[in-house]
View 1: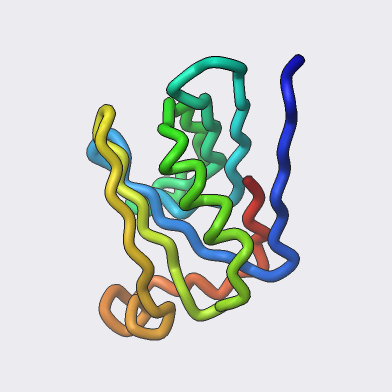
View 2 (view 1 turned 90 degrees about the vertical axis):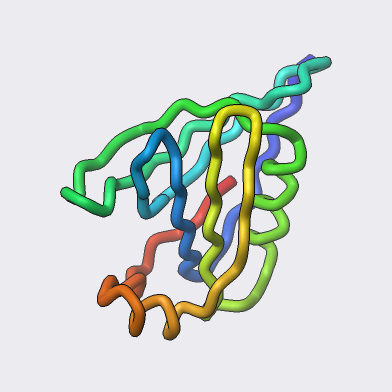
Length: 117
């Protein structure tokens, strides 16, 4: 029996993903949770920052990365951005302030995109 879990944010959430030597703004994440597997299958619906090209990225993630995504979606801090770097089996993440990010990069994350895990 497979279990489907969905955590939705009612407010805008900002996720930046570094994957395969590209950086993306993530609009939505779907995660399939197969029984008895160490790796979960995630689809990051995102747009590449360099050219604004939309892509669906199929990525295997660990349970730890999934837990980070879920906890971030549950947070009620609209001024935080989750930055996630996935490189093979390794993943790193951090939270940063939206205003600081905008000042440093010139990219605005002020969209009303919902974040879904």
